Image 1 (tube, rainbow, N blue to C red):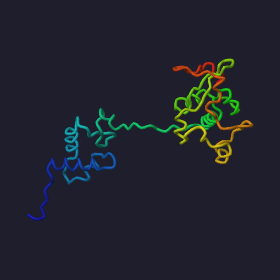
Image 2 (cartoon, rainbow, N blue to C red; image 1 turned 135 degrees about the vertical axis):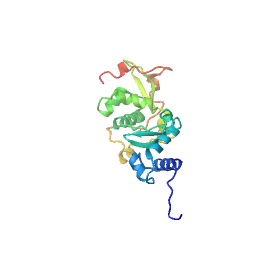
Image 3 (cartoon, rainbow, N blue to C red; image 1 turned 90 degrees about the horizontal axis):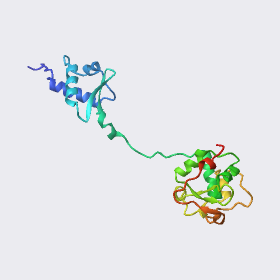
Image 4 (cartoon, one colour; image 1 turned 180 degrees about the horizontal axis):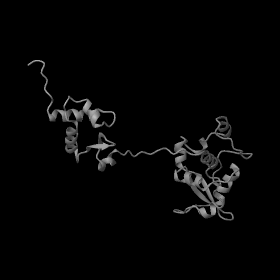
Length: 217
């Protein structure tokens, strides 16, 4: 009896096909599966049996472009979705605007444009407000009552500052290549109380009048 070999039964062929599909780096054709089975094994029948057995389970045997592979059931795809917060990068214009607000606050849109030397797009301030780096500080007691902007607590948290007095000086900023703007003579670090005498506070729930504040964008 030695030397005789016995072909695996259908259940064993099914097990082998299941193992091949599970371990394969990518989908397999029926021919590729058959080449790895004993001679005479019916790969097609084993595939059909597996497809029936896995129907309605968490993973199913699917055929795509004549290739077979186990796939997560379509109705369970939501379990594989990873929700994560992607960090948003600030553009150069946004960084310059944030720096101007930090060092000149409270400051109006027109004053920001004056320092930058170019007009400020609506989206730049919108983004800084949305990300919580900037807040509405008040309204100037001047014609048009323009909105003034100041940094918010998240700005201090993001840059590891205990208070605005911890902002690096102009010399430090320029030495680090972080500030190349033309700053006015007599520039000094911001004082949170500055401007309190010539502006009114923003009332709770009030939003900037973008139609007025962003004319010309």
